[in-house]
Amino acid sequence: MGQWWTARVLPVISIDLRSLALFRILLGGLLIADLLIRGSDLSVWMTDAGVFPRDFIIDWSGDNRWSLYFISGSWLWALLLHLTAAGAAMALLLGYRTRLALIISFVLLVSLHNRAPLVLQGGDNLLLLMVFWSMFLPLGARFSMDAARVHPDHQRALSAQPNRYLSVATVAILFQAMAVYFFSAFLKSGPEWYEDGTAIYYALNLDEVATGLAHYWRDEHWLTVPLTRFVWWLELLGSILIFTPLLRVPIRLLMMLLFIAMEVGFILNLHIGLFPFISITSILLFTPSETWDALARRFWPNAGEGLTMYYDEDCSFCLKMCWLLKTFLGLKAAQIIPAQTDVEIAEILEREFSWVVVTPSGERLIKWPAMVAVFAASPWGRLLAPLLAWPQQLGNRLYDSVANNRGAFGEGFTRVLPWQESLKMPGWGSQTVAGFFLAYLLLFNLSTIPNWRLPFQTAAEDKPYQVQFPKAWQGVKRLLRLDQKWSMFAPYPNKTDSFLVVPGVLASGKLVDVYDLVEAAPSFEKPDLLFDTKFKNYRWRKYLSRVGKKRYKDYRTYYGSFLCDRWNATYGKTDRLTDFNIYRMVEKTKPPGVARKVVRSRVWRHYCVKDQGDKVEPALKAAGLW
Image 1 (tube, rainbow, N blue to C red):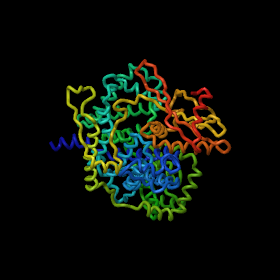
Image 2: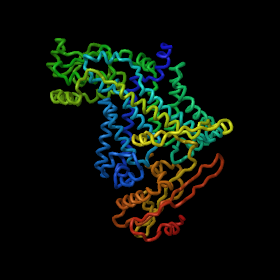
Image 3: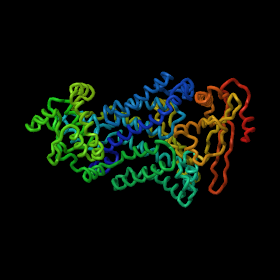
Image 4: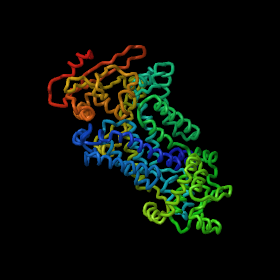
């Protein structure tokens, strides 16, 4: 029994350290991408001059919501926090002080989400949860600056550490990755998913998120109906089968392939931002150790074999640089040797004031060509080698500049990258905390299902049951923002498209398009490609689709002020905008073959100056637009 448990079950809930390294790199990249997308509208989302003044957001959010962005409403403060978050994300990507980088990233990501809640989507929740669980995992154990900082005398012990890693946190993060699909399947209780099979038809007809590709096949019901049912069954059963101990490797790889293919389908057909990329990143955690071993045998069986890097033994900085290159470039078989151990190599080092790299063919290289040779020996660095070889003269100058100042670099490296005897792995304390949150969030996920009945079951077949989550316990979830309701396209896809039209009147009486910032009368016609025409990016799409709804009407005052300021800053030197109306255009998707129409309703009237009565509608009537 013990042998069966070790051989069959433990690998199912373990994660390969190489998978964690890939996950870390992608997670850092996603955090940076998220900051770049938000950063293009930093003053809009994150300052008091934008659409979310701090006092309003604090009152709106209620208890247990906090943010470092609440300290100041200045764009300088927001920029400082953004840059700090970007620095932590880059440190995470490189695996530099990984645990600290994760803690900083988590704190700033919670702050970011609480500062601008109206632009959030399910992918933001998943990204935050991935960062949260990562704090309990050794993400820096492979291909990282942390691993490269282990002193050469102790590197053998690090290399001997098994790649397969098991802890409470591995169970937690694997569960979290599949909870997105499993609980989403139960929330997809509408007949559109199982009985009618029209869910994909409705999703692709949601023009505010549909891409151009979606328009070509969304009415092909012979394809969308079976595909709808396949997606639902994949989410329900695939999230279970991926944990099977029987035929573990082939079934796991098949489930990974199907889930990733589904996410690629989302990328190609729906404008839903980083969500699919975050999901793919989480799915890659399931990559079996056997797969990594097979890839290593096939593509880099003895990477770096025959390559020797000779460094000046009196230069600690030089040794660290060699170890960084060996670690990040995957040169497992490469040797790093003091140049003084070989008389001829030592003479070259003294004469050229340069490290020496000896290639497998016996060629001795110095300075920048030596760097190119090291990259060329790497399984993935070889792709960059031709590019690095091109500016050889510039590279030699860069090398000489570093070499001539290696004393200063050495002091800096000693402070920033000190040697360490071992790589510290998460202890039992952190695993105990991870265990608590695993149980806590499992219970909360169970409570999000309003009734535990499969969509194709009738009420007569089985009495529904709902798990209760104590209200007193929700404070922890709100404090850490560990939101867990995976209701994407549930209980069925949204069946209404919406976009805003904002006609305004200038002081001269001219009718203008305030929304599109055009000095001409607006159009109330629905564009063919709604997302590309009406939304700058998916953050704006999320915000504008919400601000027009009754639930979020309190936000409209600040959106209106933003529109006034934007227009008058652009055009208002001589003829200022005085007032405008916001119209919400709604089109309800009908069943296949049924015609639909766009319905217009005014949701807001805004005055950039004192109330002078409604001048917009008379102007629209005069222009034949009413």
